[in-house]
Image (tube, rainbow, N blue to C red; front, side, top):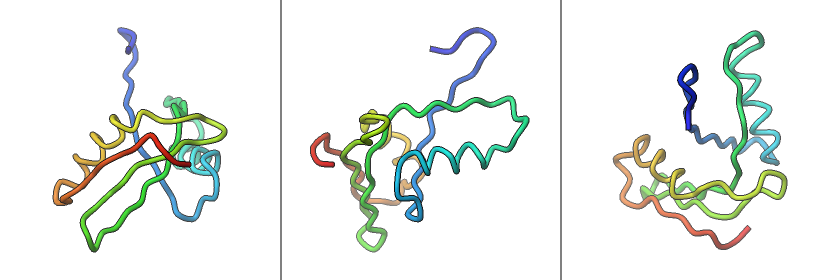
Length: 95
């Protein structure tokens, strides 16, 4: 819940070039730049199987360092970014 004087925004990030969730988090922090008034907190991780030729995204698994993200919230965000996709689903199974 946001305080009166703050705003929170949930974001989803994934970079194929990053081996670990901590690498993704670090790159995301670096992208906002030094001196920014924004602060970031990693709420968990998982994996995304992206098959653009099929129009599908599948979210699953967890991060060993950050735990499991709320995959339901993740797919809600992905559905807004990929409205043309036929299938955006998740499972809490797997690593």
